Structures are given as structure tokens and as C-alpha cells.
Image (cartoon, rainbow, N blue to C red; front, side, top):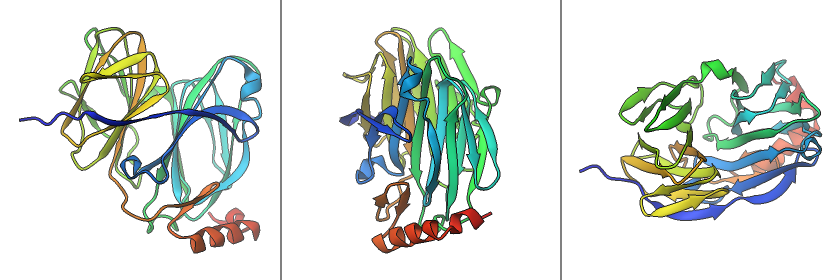
Length: 283
């Protein structure tokens, strides 16, 4: 008999700001076991350019991967490796910071609606000292599946079986196995997706409301899912949600600003290396 995942715990996104005053809603899971391998979900959403025009000027990272996904709006990425890429509406970017990288993410317009996400993903201890990597995925590179019964699914990372149809993703570079799915649906449309039974899994609702079994999740809520083979979702109206799943990393997590390591000694080393200008020499 197929084991169906259910919601076992919920968290609400909290308003905060980051970068140069960019207003965001955040779910922080650095020390939540069920959140691993993910660390944080930031949702950027505003109709007022003053909420985000300052963007995220140059700043360092070590020890994490970031996955950025823009539903609407444009950002430009530049980093110390010499990469420069445009994150357009419907596109995504992946970066593994490894031993160190300095990057910026700046909006390319002064007005208009912005809606997107940045997900922080932990790296295994052995990957935290590897060279940094970067890749971007334009909207047309991201596979999409639509039907009257399903609504629309975009598979951003990890090959996924959606309503018995295999959809292969564009992202294959992540050092940590993950699934990342964006589902948009109208009332009574349904989705079933199979997930690796060993993966932690969760759902973040960014629009409307949907039901997981008998429990409804509403906008700004994250639901942690029990172990199982599949998850069944039904939209309760005009809805949008992210489905995130990944192989847990059972290692200590020590977090300080843009650095995520396994010990405080490693955090102090990261700070020293950055202050000494070593991040700028990594290629």
C-alpha cells in the first residue's frame, strides 16, 4: 500500500529585511531537523519598488548553496568568479559558495512588481571547502506540465513524477539531492507527486490555500510533511505553492550571517579569511 505524506507541523513566514533594506518574508530552519538540507526560505514580494530597489550589494558566502527563483521581476547577479547573469521572470539561478564567493544581486528596474524566492541549502562538510560554482536557467529551460486537472507545474530541481508523468529538471549540479517544484492551480485541481522516502519534504504556500489531506495550508504557511512515498494536494482556490524535498544532512549547523559551517572555529576562520581578502582570490 502506498504511504501518503501528511502535514505534521506548520510554520508561518515572518516579515523582515535584508540586503539594502529589501523587505522579505522569511522562514528560518537552521536548527530544525525536519528542514534539512534546507536552511532558509526568503520570499521577496512587493508592488512598490522602494521595498527592494536597494537590492543585495556585494556580500560573501561560505558553506551553502543558494537557489533563486523569480516568478516576476528581474535581478542581475555578479560575483567574484567573473560570472554575470540576469534572473528574468520565470528563471532561476543556482550557486554553490563552497570555500568562498562574493556576489551581488541587484534589481534591473526602478518600478514594477517583484515576486521571487531565495532558498538556502546546506552543503556537506566535504563540500564547504570546494571551489564555488554558478549556473543560471532561463525560463524556457525550466520544464513545465499543464492540464485542466492539474493546473501548471514547473520542475525547477530534481526529476519528479507528477500525476504519473516523469518530468526531468534542468538543475543537475546541486551537491545535495533535492526536489523543487512550483505548482499553480485553481479550485479543485489536484497534484500527486512521488518523493524519495528518505527525503525530508515540505510545502510553502505563497498564494491562496491548498489542502494536504484534511489539513489546509494558507498563504505564508509552511507545512512539514511526514515520511511517505507520495504527497496529494488539492487547491482550494487560485493558489500557488512550492514543494521542497531533499536528502537530510546529519551534521552540526553553525550559522553566522552569510556563513554556515559545522563549528564556531570554522565560522571564525571564514570571517578571518574574508577580512584578509582571500575570498577575492578564489577562482
